[in-house]
Image 1 (cartoon, rainbow, N blue to C red):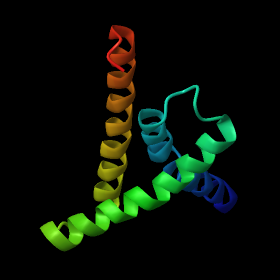
Image 2: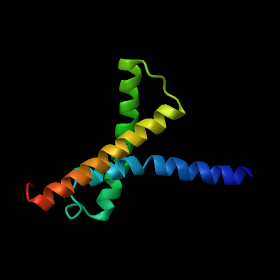
Image 3: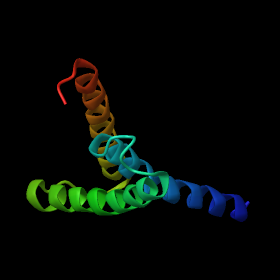
Image 4: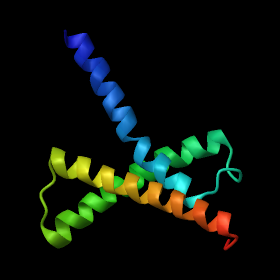
Length: 98
């Protein structure tokens, strides 16, 4: 049973260190300009940089405690910001604005 908990923890930590940055990299860099290895690298970098920095600022400026729900919330907000930026970029390209 302990081994399964370790596997679950590894999967959770890997996805937490990848997905927010992946969605943010989709929004920041167009699909055809960045190859897959660079996008994976940027995904880890953006996740590791943005999530803790956002949590630190929210804790210091607004006094929000850092716990499980605040971490998941920040990851969700960063992921949604990347998705919205990606969708907005796609719509702008369809209309020829970019």
